[in-house]
Length: 316
Image (cartoon, rainbow, N blue to C red; front, side, top):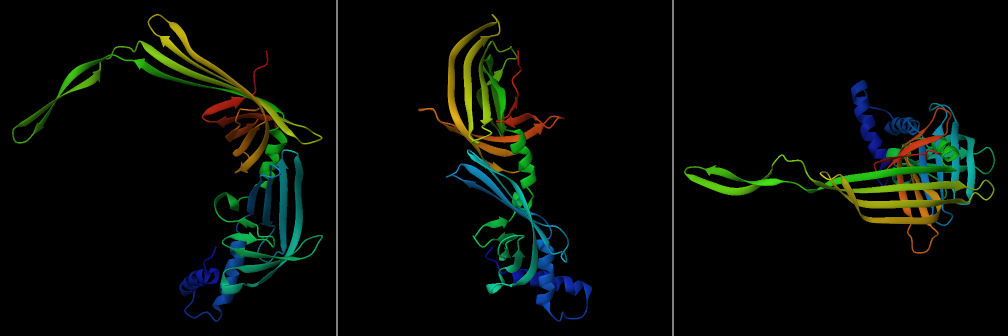
């Protein structure tokens, strides 16, 4: 964001003009200004910001509503958290193009909201810099519209119960035999080494670790408090394939209550929530959720977490 924006655009502009005209441009700065205006309109720009004090996540977003000669700009905001509820708000602003900033690092946009005082946005590093210092936009996910996508998540994700099971099996006992490996090194050298190779006999003993997770995510409709309960059961066992006998090696159950909140949002299918334990002596967890899906009625259906697919518990 500290690069000279005007010089970067001038280099592109001169190259473009050289391909389209034999005449020298009369005003390169004017051409560059037009290119920056076009660059502004290429995509929406958003900022996801987590507030550790209020345990809430907010998204701020600008998106032009027309071409470079249309003076309408949408500004969207939304916030959600433990005890925080700020529904989506959309303002249609008007704007006028400004001028290049100091050292030609930025370009200004004069914005007038439907209510309140006009203010200036500075376009720098593919982001809009607001008067209070927020950088809305940038690279990657920050040039995508995310407010409406997240609105769908917070409408469907709370007040659900989820369960998932992880299972891992590995071999404890395998049958190997000795074999002699001979390596020839010219002109007349032979190296012999004894190695172990699998005999082809079926393994007789295997070990198994299974972990069962079940948790609910509640949200109070009046106080907007986000609470829940986690139940985890981990079982390690040994299974003899010949006798078909399973022996439990260890079993552990962990439970805790928690407050929960979003800490990051990439899309309506990928986001992160934090479970902040309220049970003494037990830590919470960060859950990086992906492939979140809704059913045909628009209700939460499943998601992927740690390689495990979570769904609603089957009711007896």
